[in-house]
Length: 317
Image 1 (cartoon, rainbow, N blue to C red):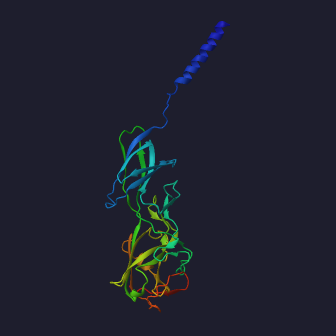
Image 2: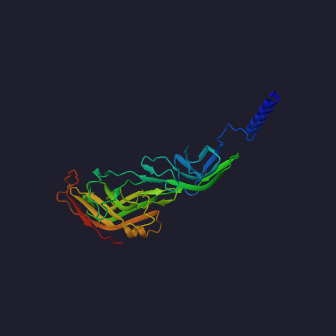
Image 3: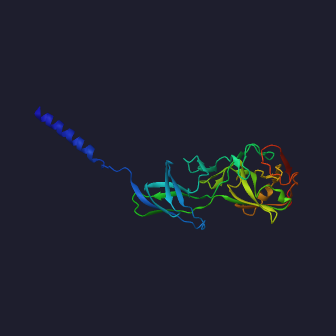
């Protein structure tokens, strides 16, 4: 009996020992590595952002990690080995920016907040008249500078000792300029800056797809008057127009004359935008505009939002 019990105990011990030896013990499950991130600015040599951001999405789990860097050059990150898709962009001076759908690199989108006021005259945007057909568009602020890049299938071996991720940021926004020249009766304007809007612009930009979004908005901007040249000039940024649909683009200019009367002029600038030689640098030109003479020149009345006078102007190219 004692011999039988001894054999049983011996067998149990052997089984237990075999179970412990079939796999090595591992107390570190992170396998994290130091990886160098470099932002190469060959595609935007004049760019000088004060900080950058990198989002890495695991392949195939799509798990996202976010890293921030001071300056524009990059730095070291601590990351697990594996494959990733990467998206970088500047994150300085972005109080104007909103983000959504950021959990997926394909849907990651930057867009702008509502424009609640027209800056030159301090008028509420919801109260000013809109060009016909644009009344339903959201009034959205213009963006500021965005540089970004995407790199796919970034391989970081778990045993890597010297790994570098290089991205090549480039401009993601479009530069628009507007010039209205040969203006008659320009001396009757009540100030040196005027409000204007342009309709049909893309609401945002999907950085992962490097493409503007399809939803259209109206964006306000300011025109600066030059009384010596009798012209108005503006420069501003947009996300461009929809890559799918050519939306109509109406330029609306709001003016307050010296007698307090309010005028707005609309111009269809669609063809100038469609036919721009460089869709990322669009120059809109309007020749000749005659302003009405005020009834009481120099009256200096404070503008309000009532009783706007309107005029639709055919553009002379």
